[in-house]
Length: 214
Image (cartoon, helix red, strand yellow):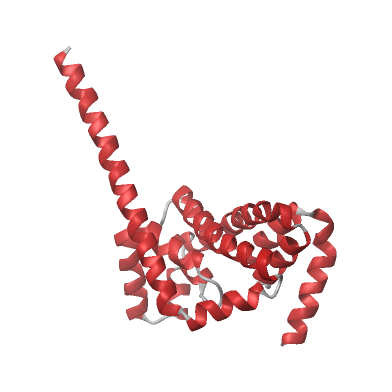
């Protein structure tokens, strides 16, 4: 299995390497839409060979993931409830639905941040089944992948392509720390979104009050 993965990686690099930034985006689209590829390893190789533009590969990888994820998302929206129930039991299905009903954006943002073996496509498919809107869906995937690939870029520039292993070990050995950091980040995002919402409501209320006074 490891040898096959290595061969598949080399083939993809040979075909897409001449495309530069666009090749990284194409790999991300392929990985998110249909055929799983060693995304982190491929991106790390790109970043290491062009360290001055590592941030561009981060953006292209995040954008490609958001675009490619539309395929399983739209398949889920087209009527994937029965298909989803064949993959997970009813209790997990209900828990997943409740999570999306409470806060669909965070329900997709968190899995998009996490490295393999997170069952990312399951959450993407579920987002379609539970009728998440397209733009919030793409934004959640983009931001989650942006954070994940940014961490990968920092490790790659500092340690080289072996950062893929470092990222995997970090997630495995310090899962509780990672979850705590993610929890704090999500709380910060939630507070920011709530303050922005209240601010917009306050501005709208002030404008209405001004109209009535005039």
